[in-house]
Every structure is written in structure tokens, then in C-alpha cells.
Length: 226
Length: 257
Image 1: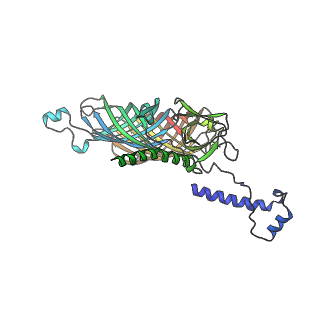
Image 2: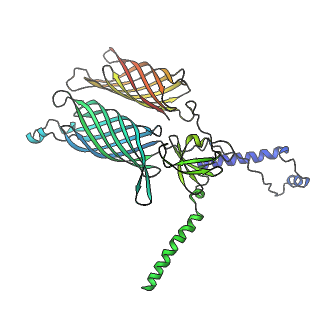
Image 3: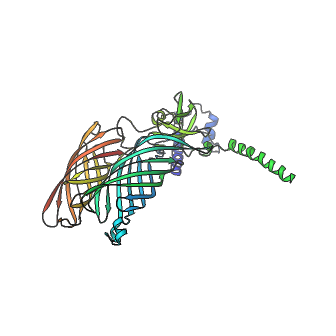
């Protein structure tokens, strides 16, 4: 982009220089001597004023509103114990306060107390995979600064998120509501660290009658701004 | 031992001196000249905030006539650097008053309406009801002109007897996009995959085609942030020569980018 622009500007400059020499009214004070110089084609390099105009439309200022990254942590699934969770997220900062976020994550169901005590299995291993996605809207409640040592300062924000999603586990899937809070530490111009806690609220009828369950997810993550 | 101490003292004295001369000769501002768009402050002063938001405090002001480099932009804030390598965040509205080397104002997108050149895309997420069950959807649309947009969507319907996955492609027409609450109509086609839940009597359908039409409205909360709600009617053509109709309503948030 940069070099293309430079070439473009050079072309514009060349055309402008050529164009100026065609307009005699640009040089009303041309002396006969100068004219003679130009006529006999000798090496006299006439210094022309810089007439190129910077086209800022071309050198668009880089936008950095997206954030993409991954998180690792623990997911507490009601009746199935606490297990590791990995997730990927894409964030778009709409305004200085609001952001939209899409998350996809995977985890596994552990053993229920019943399974551990009786030694039987309610679900085969193949159906213990947990997949979920959420679509959230977030709000930066407390933007701020963090001082690390004497010389380092990082921008930060404490935010709230809420949204909807779907969770697939035990071979079934269900509508999910999510709500949570997080903390974003902006490490430099392109990287941030996150600490998140989310509650995934979903109805399940896997073990007995349908009831709503709360499933807490706590993660640490890193994102890259682009 | 003494010579070692002397050497150490010499080195200690030399380091800051070297560092200082380095600073004088090599400002980041000079090294990056030409790499970033450079403008001149034309207002009496330009306020620099510590972060990209009005709640971050102002820590410095740049006087009229001083040059600044624009490093990048986040939402309506610009990260800028002054001649002394001080970096901070300036508000979009203030940056609109800065001047390029040509004397022109920094050309920024319009705030009076959605600037299609700057923000041709719209993306959003919605949730609602599809044929009696929950549905979540995401969509991405591209403005072909101020009123027509091509739209790609994905939906996940989570019903009590079956779950469905939909992929949709359509066209949306918004006759008055400049209204605060702008109604629109849309129509399109797509594919649906119905996955019956364990123990339900819903027959498995590998993949069916569908058509839809709908009406809705977009409520513009800010220039680029909106609430969207719509109703759609789907006609699903199944393999068993039997068309199924589904109604859907949903609401959610979207943004232009």
C-alpha cells in the first residue's frame, strides 16, 4: 500500500511537472535567457514547486476495532464436575463503550457422583464432548489504568457481558443464556489479556425432568487487535 | 580491583550519556515520517486522553500548529503521536479539525448519516422464536447501494423436539435508510438441516431447501450501532413432497463496519 502510494504520488508529480511546462502562464517571469536554456535542451534542471497533493483517501488510517483470541480455563457443569475448557472469540468494538462478541468453546463432561460411586456409565465417552457458542453484547463499565512497577502503565477495562447461545452436550443441545463479567488488560497496541467469568444458564432434561442449570466458566485469555 | 571499579563507573556514566544522544538523534516521530498520515493541529489546542474513551483523563494538550502522526484508530478515537514522541488518544470530532499538509481538513466519514464508503458492511446477532422453539442467528450484509443489501445468514433453531441449522442468502430493501427507525423487507433462499432430538418422533431430514420473505425494522441507536427486529415466513420444501411453513420473529443488535 505504502509503496503503491509512493509510485502513485511520483506519477502525479511527474504529470504535474510535465503539465506545468505546458502552461506558459505558470511562468510569467521567464527571462529570455531561461527560455533559451530550455530551448536548446541543455541540462538546466528547473526546480519546480512541489505541487502534489496528498490523497489521504488512499492512505486510509488503519482501523483497529476487532479483537481475536483464545482462552483456557475451567467449566463447571452441573452434575458433571469441573473440566478444562478452551474457547476462541471474535470481538468487535462498536463504540468506546459497547462491543459485540462471538465465542465458540469446547469442553468435556466429567463423571457424575452416581457414576463415580456405582462404577456404571450413564453416557458413553463419545457423547461426553461439550460444544457451545454464545453471541454477546458487552459494556465497558469501568475503563481505567493499571500501574505495574514504576514505569509501566496499561489501559484496562472491567466489562459486563450478556447474550444468548447454544450448548451441545450428551448428544443433545439446548438454548443457552449467558451473563458474566470480565477484565481486559491492554498490553500494547495490538495485544490484550482477559480474565472472564461467565454463567451459562440452560435447561436440560438429560438426568430426569427438565430443569435449568447454572454452569460457571472461568477463563484466562489472550487476544490480538486488528 | 580499582581499575575494574573505574571501568564500571565509566560505563555507568557513559550509558545515560549515550542514551540521551541517541534520543536526540532518533525520535520515533522522525523514524516514522511518511509511514503515518501526518496532520497539523488547527484548533487552539488538541486534547490527548490516556485511553480511547471520554472517561480516560486528558494528560496533555498539543498546541495549534504542531504536527502529529496518526498511528491508528479505534472506534471514534485516534491514537496519535506528537513531535516529542508523546502518544495519546484524540477524539474523532477534534481530529476532524486538523489540517493536512495541503491545508485541507483531514477527510473523515460523515457523521450525519451512515457513510457507505467507510462502512459498507453490517453484522449482527439476534435471538427469538422459530416455529415455537428458540432460535439464534447471525448475519452479515453488504450494502450494494443505500437501499439494497445482499445478506448472508446462519441460524440455529433449538426446539423441544428437533434442532435445525439454517444457511440463508437473500436481499434486503430499506426504502428510507436515513430514518431513525427504518423499516425493511427481505427475501431469500437457503438450506435447512433438521436434527431430531433423541426420542422425538420428528423424522430426520438430511437437507432441505427453503425460501423466505420477511419484514422488519432497524432502530439506529448511534450512527453505527442499531437494534434490529424482524418477522420472517419460511417455506421449507421437504423430500416427502410436503411443504412445511415456519414463522420466525427475532430481535438483536447489529453494527455497521
